[in-house]
Length: 458
Ligand SMILES: [Zn+2]
Image 1 (spheres, rainbow, N blue to C red):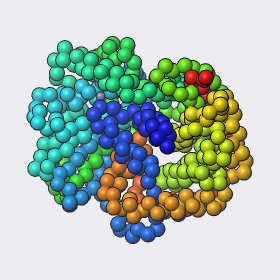
Image 2 (cartoon, helix red, strand yellow; image 1 turned 180 degrees about the horizontal axis):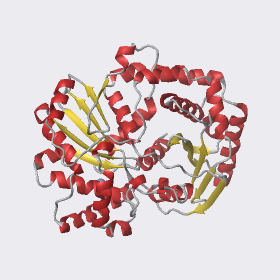
Image 3 (cartoon, rainbow, N blue to C red; image 1 turned 45 degrees about the vertical axis):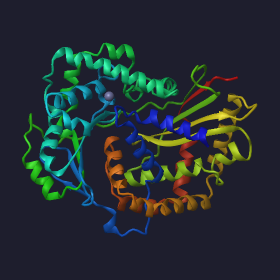
Image 4 (cartoon, rainbow, N blue to C red; image 1 turned 90 degrees about the vertical axis):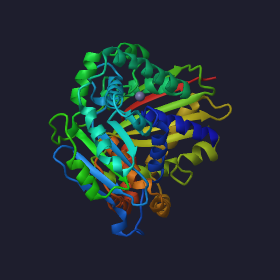
C-alpha cells in the first residue's frame, strides 16, 4: 500500500502542476475533492448549495461562500488563463505570476505577504489573500492590482528568474517522476499546448524575456477574464460594500473564458524502453488518450467518469485490481486514473511496478488483456450499485467538512470548468446507471493515442 500511495502522491503532483508555497495545501484539497466529490439523496436541497453569485460589471464571475463561524476570510482571484495560453517560452506564465504578485506586494505592506500566495497551472493563474474582515477592501484592492503594469526595477525583475530556477530544482528533487512525466506528456500531445510545461526548463527560465513577460501579462491578466472567490466570515452585504469601494487600475468588463485547445487523438502507439537513474524499481507507464462520447451536462459528465474510474480501480468484479494484483501476481503495486482532458477527451493512466519475475512487457500485455476483457464484458450492475452506494455514504462526511464546497468550487474554476453545486452533483449521481457507465467503458476500448514507457527493465 505504501508503494501505491507513493506513486499516487507523485503522479497527482505532476498532474496538478501547482507551484509555489501553497502547493501542498492544494494537493491535499485536490485529493479530497477527487476522492469524495459526490453527494446523495439524503441532503435537503437547501443545505446543498450555499454558494452565492454576485453580478459585477468588471469581473467574469464572483462567488461567495459565507461561513459565520470562520475567524477570517480568504479571497482568490483566478484568471482563466494559464500556461496553455502562453505563446512564448514555456514557463513564462509562471514568471508573469511571480512578477505580478511582487509588483503588488513588494512596495507595500510586507506583513500581509505572510498570508498571501499565488500559483499557475495549465488553465489558470491565481492570487490568494487571507485576512480579517477589517481588511477586506484593502485585500481585494491588492488582488485587483495584479492587473496593473509592472513598475519594479528591471534588475529586480530579472533576478526573480533565479527564484524560479530554485523552484524548478526543488520540484525535480522532490519528485523522481518529474522528468519522465514531462517526456510522456510531450509524447502524448505532439505539437499541442497540452504538452506545455508550467515550470519550463532551466535554459528557458534563465532566458525569460521581460518584454515578452510584459506582453503576456497584458494579455493574460484581464480582470474581465478573472473569477473572484471569497470564503469565510463575510456576508453578501459586506462584500458588496467592499466591491463598491474598489478602484480599477484599467477598464475591465466581463469576457468569456478562452476555449481549451483540442488534442490530437489519431490512432498511434508510441513505446520506449528507458532508464531513469532515480527510479528504484522497474516501472511501467501506460497512457491512452481517447475522444469521449459527446457529453453536455457538466455534473453528469464528471459523475460518470468518477464512478467508472472507481469501478475500474477497485477489486470488485469488473475492476482491474483482482486480475492484476490479488488473483494473479502481475503487479506489486499500481496506480490507475481516468480523467477528462478539456471537455472532449479522456485520459487513461496506469502506472505499475511488476511482481517478482514479471517483466514490464509481460505486465503491459496482461494489463491490456485484462482491460480489454473488462471492456468486452462490461462492469456488472452490482459493482456500479456498490460504488454509487459508497459515494453516497461519503455524504455525511462531506457535509461535516466545511471546506468541501470551497474546494469543489476552486477546483472547477482553476480547471476552467463551469461550476455546478451539490444539488446538481446529487442529481447527476442519481442518474448514473450501469448502462451509461458501460457505454462510456466501451468508448475507452476504442482506438486512441497510446504512450508506453518501460522504465528500468531488469
Ligand atoms: Zn512560483
